[in-house]
Image (cartoon, helix red, strand yellow):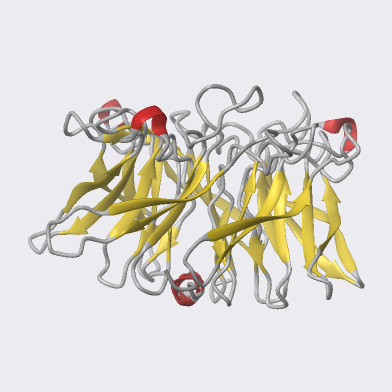
Length: 426
């Protein structure tokens, strides 16, 4: 197994900077889960395109073993899309191949897919329970047309067992330019079990090894550097990693934005860039995105009950000197225009537009798609417009694009109320 490159990720970055087709928002359901007995359900993660225009993603549950699936959607020449389950998790005894994937997938340069499962794997302990501590996996495409995809577990997380390395990886993986994988675990790392950032490196013999780049809250609560990182990490142009923590910081529960910078001795130095508050909104579940000027963007899922940001919002951090200026709320949902954004934002760089979703609220309390251009914000789609929420409800995945439309998932709704894959032109 050779080291992987960033080419697929660079394609995604280029697409993220594409100009989307202008016009009114139009939503199309590409696939409703539950169409067959072994189909997946609860597609929580984002999607990824291959070079042929097929879409790939994961479902948290369902499949032949109810341990979740990895799936492929193929565009049909006559219109519509066909779904194929390319892997059923928990296919091995005691789910040693992993179970319950929460995040989307990433490609390498030769067509293999990589992801994480929040449970399953070889190791269990008191912190990650009897369901396993989670895995990082690879899916290799069929050697012959119509053959099976082959799953390989690259890393079994151990939690706090024997000085563990983290558990419950819930975020999407990220490549660096030399073919190493980076991600986060919500728990584990030390006796406090409050999360880690990790790196996986492949050796000449094809064996992967894991290194903890950072362990959160090493001194114990209230965790000024944050706790429970739920999303993955993002690289800037200088090779620094950025991410968010769901809790920690002020009052121990509102979360942070952090940066990890590589040092000359091989270690990484952590800087807490922002600490969220109840009044301004907190508990981010999103990755960090960048615009062309180096500003940071993301979402917070909640705020103090009855306060100005009780439904969360979109934040922006602006570079200033050696740090970042305090966050500015760009979008404060109120319920009627959406509530609880959890997936982060899509940056249409050329159009100077930020696009995202709220998981609930809106006209039908099933979530929204919103757009921010400059200081102007508006809801461009309310989910559950169709009878029985056939258009989906509770949008759950980050957006990806082919340059013409945005594609994502909803965790609920659809013809069988088990979630959908949808496209929207905002």
